[in-house]
Length: 152
Ligand code: C2G
Image (cartoon, rainbow, N blue to C red; front, side):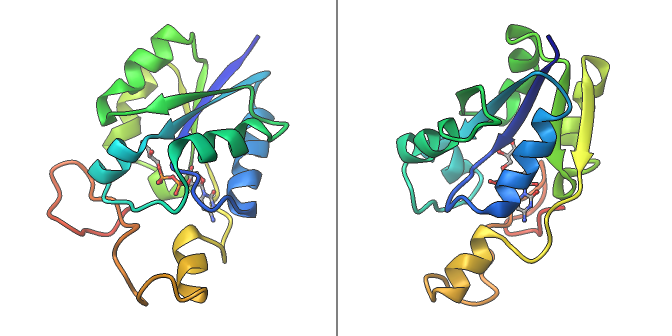
């Protein structure tokens, strides 16, 4: 059984998320989603609309998802790969080349799949006037980067 692992906040679930999960599952037989907790989203400087439990409930309803586990730290990824015997870690190309994932290549495959253009949780919030335009709230600073640097 080929085991796939991906990470994310998955707030205000949209078709970009679904298409990522569908393609991730197609790379193996079992898909684990490590879902960012509220505390970890604070670290990522991401404000979520839905609670962890609600975001988990929605992910568990998706046919491609086999297991949802909490993502609580940046550093847990290698333990996750080992503990869940993961063969492939998958992320969207906004994470391509990030040192938050590249180091895993010594332990498993790391695959970056093209992001779905034209949709994002930030865009939804802005379109619904829930968030000031060109807000930086969804940008996650790379390790060691200054505050508010654009996510790669
Ligand atoms: N995604 C996508 N297309 C979009 C939006 C998102 O393919 N239009 C992908 C992202 O690339 C990511 C996944 O969907 O792989 C989840 O997106 P987010 O919830 O925004 O994830 P993020 O906040 O980047 O969390 O440790 C890693 C972080 O937890 C990733």
